[in-house]
Image (cartoon, rainbow, N blue to C red; front, side, top):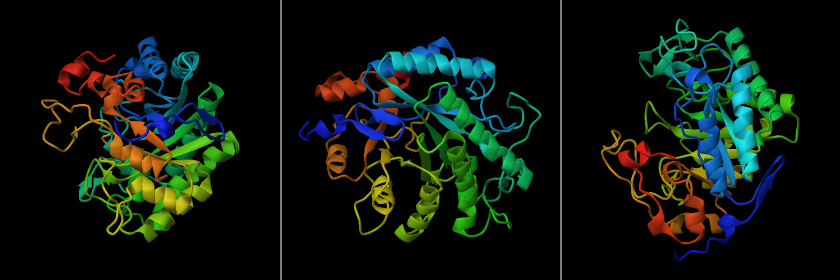
Length: 370
């Protein structure tokens, strides 16, 4: 590895979050929580990443207490006595291993399918009853529904703080509920939550403000957003840096401390005329700490490249370009997804320049997932 890794392994701190290095475990859905309760195996899984020297672990999406928040079976909840007790055990195990951890707070919106638990009779809820442009699923949210969901996000944040999490992340990306409000393709409302970019951002802003009021000024709020959607990889919320600045400023002013700019490939430029990726633009426009993510440490994509059935293999690769961008202060933190999913020691192996020892990502490695 030719690029200096020193900056990657320097401490980082913002408000309640104090990290030993700048590596982050990206949130990855696993569906290993029967009855929506995180188990001892879930705690052991996260502890192994903490033992592997990951600076911050962001959990898989964990759904808030709104009746339509969940979209998949065996996904953990972040409400109710048993689920919160399960998460407290996760937190305690991660802390015992010297790590820090934040839950990703999640509502799937119109991705939900009728027949999904916990209450299989509940339909999907979304801004306009749309899954994607021209495709309906579920019901459009009333103002009362919106208020209920905002309150549920705030309560989840309070519960997370009370059981010892070091920060929280709001999932505002990838075509789930918060992002469905942002995206004009799924937000066809004619009230104060639809129309202009400012109006479409209002729901996310209200969530952040409610969380900030509930957890206080010193607790760290991370906000994950993306241009792309699972419904449309080519979608864009913001076509220009000026639009992105307007969007981010609203959320920043509401109380976001750290932005998590989700891209599928971290090296892809976001706008013409600049090499900056989405995280780089976010830092430039907000001057807030930013997490970059997107195929870090592997040589090929998982989704959208013909191998989503796990028939292909993504091999470990160097991170020289990533380090160059980090050393240029384009972003502050680096989120690792699949590479860390299959190899809990990825961070240590990078630190020791032992790329050849990192496990590849493929069907076999997932079957023996530790």
